[in-house]
Length: 559
Image (cartoon, rainbow, N blue to C red; front, side, top):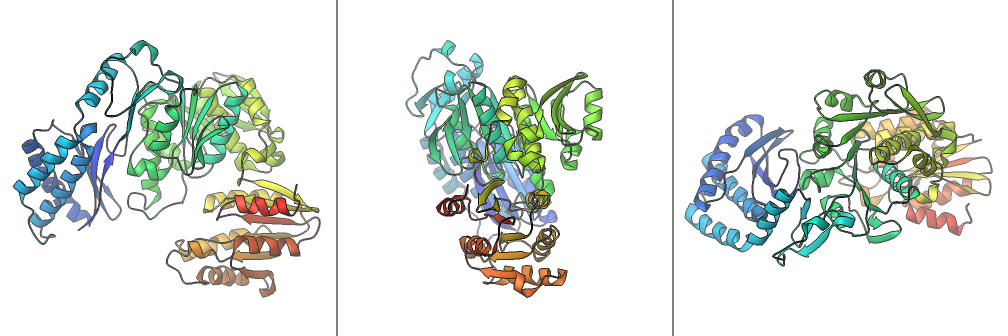
């Protein structure tokens, strides 16, 4: 057995709907079975000695180990994590996996001191009073707020006033977006749609947190901290929260309720970390978002993802489905029951509910769908339409948003440039499902010749790297520019990934002269541009980021 981590869960998570402390341990299934009761006994013994409130206990077996957690007051989560660390040491010794037995009395004194220092009576009063008043409260280490967006007020967590004007606080609509592929494009679609509907939109995402065009901070804000930050902005009257795997796994959800939650799909990406080592574990993490809409909201799912379809069979809340196939069995059954679906019927994006069919727009009217060739962006448009409709947006405003969002509003995702008659397609696709969608679209774009510039991270298995090379070759490539991407070696030697790709391409019939090895992505792009002629298509997978690629193309005069 091996200790991996002890941390705080500040919101809905895999194991609880509220705050808790979690311990991750690498072990075999048999070791996990022996550890659970011993750990629970040690935690319970310490909680009793500290005179803490009674706690709930939970555990979940995972590939390679187990997570064990107990509920704790919000103002005691750091002390609770220390309890978990002590309980692990005591349990490991008892089970023969530790070198020395930790002293209970010494640990108790230390933990009592930590608990006393962390305690915040005023915060706990505010939490209880907000519950009585029926108001939403958001808390973190530094701040606490009541209400959301335009209806919120925020204080330093140690400077809470004695009396509050409870009637002034209210919530704003919230839409949550998660999934493997399409999250970023979907939240950009949704934000654009809502702005077309004259609403002030707060956004937390992998790129930034913002209100309309005002960027509050750049970086990856797709965790609970980003959600809380944007929901405390007092000019926000609707919020879109991109919610990624890492934040869900490490801290839980940033909110306890939302009006709509969307899961775009579940496919291979970021697998290998403890807690998300396979697709079943990844699904369980993404499914956490269903908790915040289960009682009073809508859950939006992709009817073409069989894992989501199977998981939905155990869901008790209201569902909305979307699909590129109007004859999909799930779509048909949901329509027959009077439920709401968003589908592509021929070339028309439609909403169907209760037997009523409403046209939204045509796929060839959506600029970033590239005349309908970018089917993954048609799917993203459907999911964004469903999300914003669930947030109260009229279909006319949804149509206006879908048909006016251009590629400049979606940088790095399916962007096409023209450089002296050569088309250049840029995308961030970096996992099998996203690349398959991009390759399908690229094969539908007319071109005399096609070149692909790409690389792969070294932590991908050999078989997967070879599979990606095969999928790429099938679209009819005339040249392949492989970028070394040294920053993504992740345990491999220099040139290992290139050799795998080259060997597979040669096996498929490529000539050695068609395969070029470059150190940097921009070198691959420039070499492909130098090779290309008017009428050719250059496809660029910008794993290292689209911004420098865009800047280079602008320098060259691309349109």
